[in-house]
Length: 103
Image 1 (tube, rainbow, N blue to C red):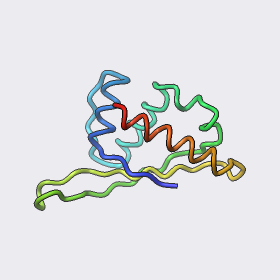
Image 2 (image 1 turned 135 degrees about the horizontal axis):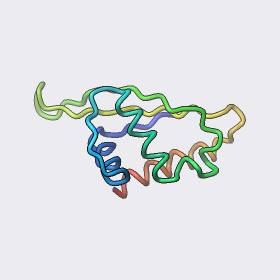
Image 3 (image 1 turned 180 degrees about the vertical axis):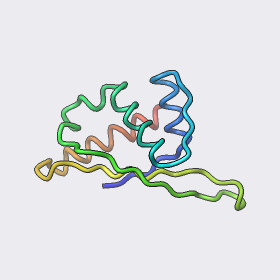
Image 4 (image 1 turned 30 degrees about the vertical axis):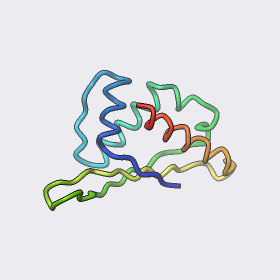
């Protein structure tokens, strides 16, 4: 399963949970930010994340009004163990989305 997250939201959440303002230039930067968020917030320790093997991050740009005015959008692909039930996967992803929406 994949979700999309704006780069600005990742930066904002990392600033809130870790006190640093990161710069996202590529998917590797976003992956580090997501890892920080999961570890610092305790979300990673919840039961829904126990079967999570990894999160793959890819990026694309969404152009708002012109070729120079764009937002970085990151696609987060959640890779779970094969035996993790679909409801558990959905719960983990929903928890992370809700967390991003609250901040």
